[in-house]
Length: 606
Image (cartoon, rainbow, N blue to C red):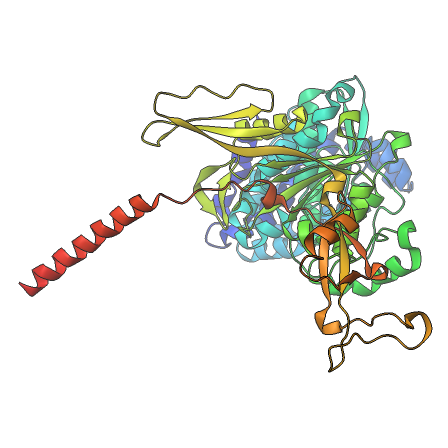
């Protein structure tokens, strides 16, 4: 049974729930029952051995060894026995769940499974649901971990799409994750294809585990013998339960999935990873954890997670970026690459010296940013705003050293047949492959649109810097729009200089200082004070002489107030000027409209 058939079969349980449950509530029943049946089947071969150890009063390590798994169940019951006693199924089911080892019990507690058992029993549905699941054979010999993981992920996706009010918070569109995973692994294909390779991946905002799962799928497709150990942390209890259940089904060590607020309570303190992925909340304030974060920033500085600076309280997404920086495996141990989804604000918010600017300064001066990719708008379930994927690494290939690649993939989308919340667009496999190639080639590129003589679009083609542009038909033309651009890290830096002009008395004379260092020097007039941003690539004095002195001959720079800032004006580098229509065309259109209006007025007057 393939994963699609399996998920469809499990989905049929929804028919039993219809009427007594809202569609958005189906997952609260189907997901924990799916986990329960899978664990039931996995433990079946060693059930007798575990019961023997349990009856002998052996401690948990003995039961784990007898089970041959990272979990056990000491109850003599199983689903087959449960449905054989219809009158006591509620009490027996609760007892059976309590028989699991603590890590598994935690999953069912976070699902609030006891409350669902009670609700199903009151509606007369408990036996029917349990009996339906008891019929499914989910034994690993029939459904391996990879198939089971795919089926479970398919169910998670379906429930997330049905429940749009929470999907945006805890569910990232699959094609966005696929793109990020491709970008993460594309430069490491040689290493990842080796037999028996083991790598680690981490998501500090794990949600239901989609990013971890798709990363595992990618590696399994490219190298079935490779092993990816998955770690994550999630705040929302239900999402945490789903993620932990998914990892358990895939054979992962579920102790690596931690619940709690990543910013205030790091569940993986001191650990580093080979790869990381994250889609933190967009534009969400971090006031709830402000005390803990500020304390770590002040007390530990760069020895902690938030040394570079703190963003404004209204948006904590850059805190997650810094958290990921602290989890990077040192380059001496193989290094790390990670991808994070951010909105546009972290690119440019905050002037020189602000927390945001200092964080950008840190990652750029440390040469950690490999690429930033602009995604199409309307890609996420709960927001239509522009979003960007940042790829950072402390093991850049030699050709990327000191460079940042910007890729504008905002036009790489197709319209969805049916909108899901704010999500109206999706990326096709081909478009994901195109963006991956742009990143992998590390070359500048344009999107060439060929138009016929009437201005109708004929073809679109990606043209790398050294490629020949496509042929143009007679009378047609070609429009070029930038897709990929490469910059030096310093290109995004600037100095904010303070320009002073002298204070003058009523007679127009310059006021001089009377004491200390200011004695005999012109005093600045604060009302005339101004600032200028000078690119790091340009000499300050030359800029001042060219741009300021001709307009204010008495001005000077207060060098003590100079600050260094960084911003990434993404859109500026991909702006394409569209010349206005010729005046003659506009005049002709106006004349036509005017004549039409006058004709209508004449008809009314007739």
